[in-house]
Image (cartoon, rainbow, N blue to C red; front, top):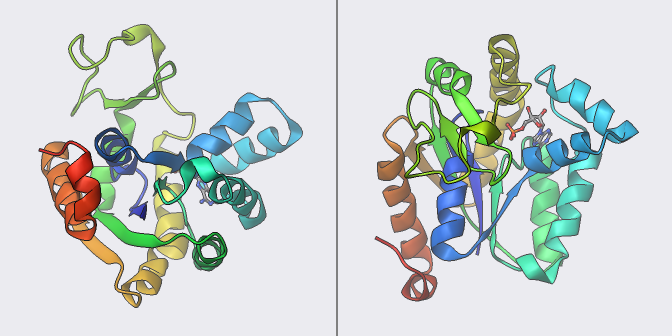
Length: 225
Ligand code: AMP
């Protein structure tokens, strides 16, 4: 089974994807993380991507689809992917349908985290990411502490697109281009809508139940609470 975690920026997709990875042995594929890796290379493509991301716009479908194609054709990830931040528009959703089919895989569910704009802004302004282990924290709601994070505070970084004016642009892009693809998944009976405002543990529980209901076999082999 492959899973799509869907929702606006700051909905908690990355955090929930990390939990699924840990509990069910999946691989998280965050197109945002893949793009940031390209930026870190300081390549011509990386610099182009950086300027798009810092405006809150979407990177071209061609760039994204090439990244995702490499993943879906790699046997290591076969039917064990949690997509975080992909697909982001209808064209990407249709290309993903084809890539999945061509590679004998399937999308088993689309978990949509519903969060309003005010909450998104508050959450993103507190977001901190560990540059060593990749864990995501929030200095207001879920701070890094000695007990939940062994790398320490020195590695915590703030994303360059986590500024208020960019967040508002990203939310606009989400509303206009990304949110409409929910109908695509609703019509395929793949959509599960989840209240993304409730606390992290409760949301994880809900997600766990959904995964369990879809694949009892998987859940017998991996720990769940
Ligand atoms: P994220 O880490 O998912 O919040 O993504 C950060 C930024 O990367 C977005 O605001 C977009 O500019 C870009 N990005 C990430 N995923 C995609 C995608 N699937 N399609 C286009 N642009 C993307």
